[in-house]
Length: 450
Image (cartoon, rainbow, N blue to C red; front, side, top):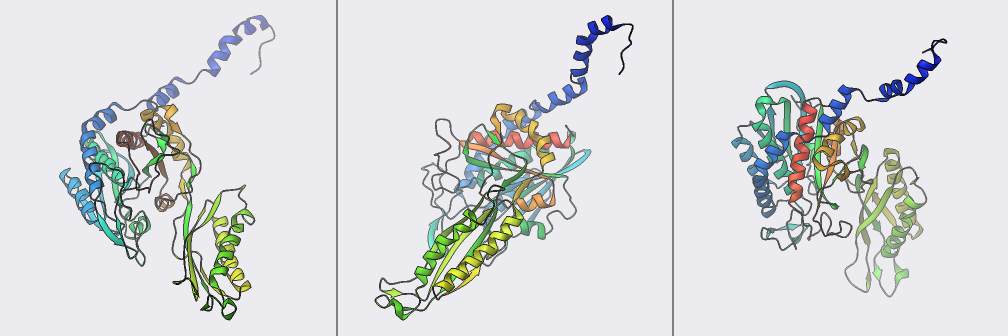
């Protein structure tokens, strides 16, 4: 804009006011922003109404844990609850998966919400009055069964969300698919399961979501806190098996054979260079870890073979492929240097891809999370080396996955028993925050809040 030459003094006197007008936020923008930073009254009301039921459900699921692809009681209880709400229920997806759709009375987008249902082969040590006493045989060993990761909480929260959405159905725009998924922890050996099989079995046939949301209770955050970040959040996970083949001989005559134990030990050490010397960890972090070594049966017999199993965690697909190839090469070449051979199955099965939150969706829904937890209680966590098969949904649909703090006040989350620990202890206040967060995110998205 050009200023008139004959009125400089008047114009200069008006500059402060003009600048104030130019810099002031648009009133409609202020109104929209305020709408996204306030907890919806219906969220608070519905969460309060179903709170006791959610706690009761969580405790029931906690007392009746079932391993991956074995969630028979769990899925039956979920289906029963959904039918009692008047919903049409679909069962048997990916073995024990359950879905239902809440139909809003008003037109609008489609949203999918996911909860996982399976437990872990862990013997509980929490001392809770509703602690699990279930036992099973897993990989040939007798063990307890425990909801040591919090999937009992996820299932109870989503059932509470279902109850709330049904109650609001007359004023609800769009449709919400409730997805109760089995086998997030991984299907047993020789079986298929989890999110990938849910999709293969036609989870989204006839229902294509515009967005999908999921949550996970997390011991590394204090209760009352939510963690979320756009882009990569949780690592890709791949399992590997390496069998080093030698030649059996007496322990007193190692020269009479080929020692696979020494070769395996050398292999474990050299494999650490795959990340430390061959991967660009300035780009993204990566991990190669050995979890078990099996070989031999007697102190004075050098065995024929040694089996090593472990995991690879990555955030970049090119790095993932390169690390697989480098580990195979290390295994084969180190074994050969000892006169042995290596059968390197890297990976030995289909792993989970990186869990990636859609950046635009995450930015859009961040104020919704802040509305229920308070802006100061919503943090951006670092990249997590743990994996989640929610990643498969995020490949199909713009998605957001977030963490809900689970550790009680007075306990340092940095030293609290972690997810998968036999002492994993969930503060049940996290159920309320998880419920309100999932409701707020869902309603804000359906109502088109920007």
